[in-house]
Image 1 (cartoon, rainbow, N blue to C red):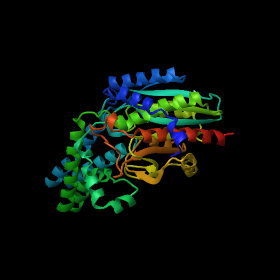
Image 2: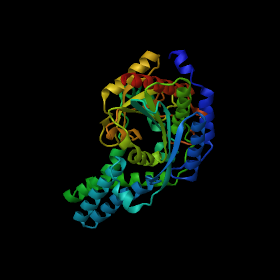
Image 3: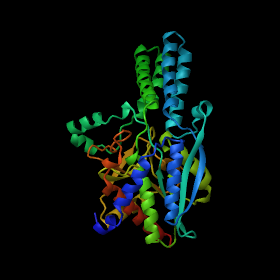
Image 4: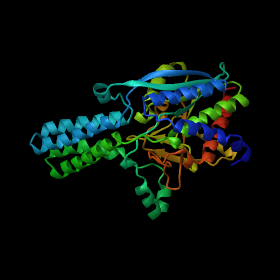
Length: 401
């Protein structure tokens, strides 16, 4: 890395932001989430930003809803065993479709019908040139995730030790949502085909998923230092950077969403409120997500069930060139089977990239673990993500002239 580019990011300031917010319990849609948002508002205002705290409605949980849906897979299995095969097929198909709708950021009809919403808080800070021809949106989120046994990294670590070459060639994360969605569908298919083997396979998948989601729903929340206070600290560092080194012709929105860990709850509200005033031809989006591991990565796309590459390959190429020019090591070619706030911007047609980081096992360090604490971070990678985003801002502004 080029020393002067990354080293101009104050790592002590990064650590101070992360430490202050990690001490706050921040479940989605909670008083702690709002307290963190208010802390961030004050910090960004002190750095000269024009800041709003937007209240949006979101569902605070995903695990309990999905536990109910995978539980319907078990109900379908019981119906099949009782001879109600057509009913079992319908229940299985409906449950599978509802799971796919939920995890893929669809209308979420099941949650809307069965779960109340609560208030989540988004922080939207504006800096730079308010009359700039182009806009850069930088995303983060300040809520924290639940833990759960399913997030234990020991399996992938063992695989990495046993097959290091194969892991290195795998640039798409494992499709963990596939068996969750397939369970109820297989129960229904087995019922229609009178196949006990297929029915039992689907019921087994549904039982495992139900147990996993029930465990998540009762597990504690992480401190969330890497996921995603590293990105929140990045917003603060960028506000300071743009104050010291303005970018003429560029309006910058520094956005920290709530309820991301409930699967993009706050970002969906941000899109409804702000996207109508943003032109996809003049707006680019950089999503900072868990950037405190050892190796900085630019994702090419994401999708729990259907992989969707981010639009506008030329923007991803621009980010890669900025990294190369600045001497920042950036890995390309990776895709995620999870979902981030970037998916909402991507589907609206905005040129979008997500910057993440991985360790030597290609894992997000301490992902959804109680060990996700400030002391476990690689602040050098956080600083690199900030420095790269600043370089991208200058390149985007230059394109608009």
